[in-house]
Length: 301
Image (cartoon, rainbow, N blue to C red; front, side, top):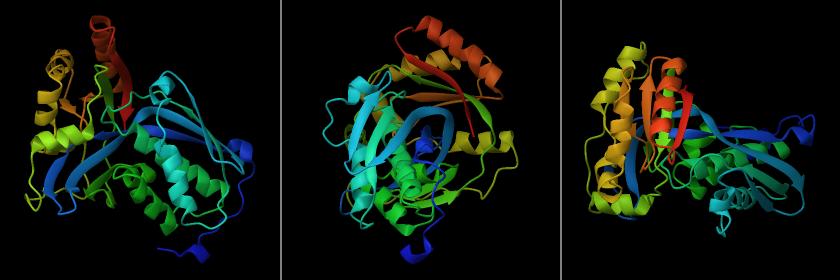
């Protein structure tokens, strides 16, 4: 990995182009394989990214600031330490003279939903700051700032299908087949800490880590693997948010569905389909029956 002296790129053509997508992170599998003495949980998770997400812009300047917009902006208005600002401060602590500026976040994903919205926003902020400060994408200070910001931020910084391991610091790219996908959140926030507490893994406990293939030959092979590797947080999340049973039933009712599962610590569930047309049909049915839910037809991969 290159050091700071080797991590400079030619300047970007114009600051006006400093925009980044912050795609939803989807934990296709999530195994909790241990709990460290410091309280962090060891994970092994196959992660993919959706075609939907938030949008982030950066207007470089002397002062660090954040403006919230979009349908989910109001839900974050009371936060004193948004992950976008935290990521910027973590990178500034590692890069002397870092140019920051005014971030504008178009918040479209539901919050506390298990699809890494805040982590994806933080990762997008780091990518924007790297471009504004002509840092190479593999600058080790970016990875260090990502992990210091949050356990899901390193995999979101990479932004590609991957196996995430440890507390999130080990990210191994993994090519995933393309699927149509529906994301459904019943607009019930679930606190990650409460879900891990309900799991009840004692400090020092260890479980076998799953064997993940280096690649999948196709959609059927990927589905066979995914069906055999669950999300260990789904059962405790269901105890905290019983509405997840309704979400699962609504998604399972679509004839073309291939897999239904909860992402992350919930309460968003995803369903996979062979193509985006099947996903769109399923999303319309779910949205018509549950108009109060957040329902999004998209793609995985």
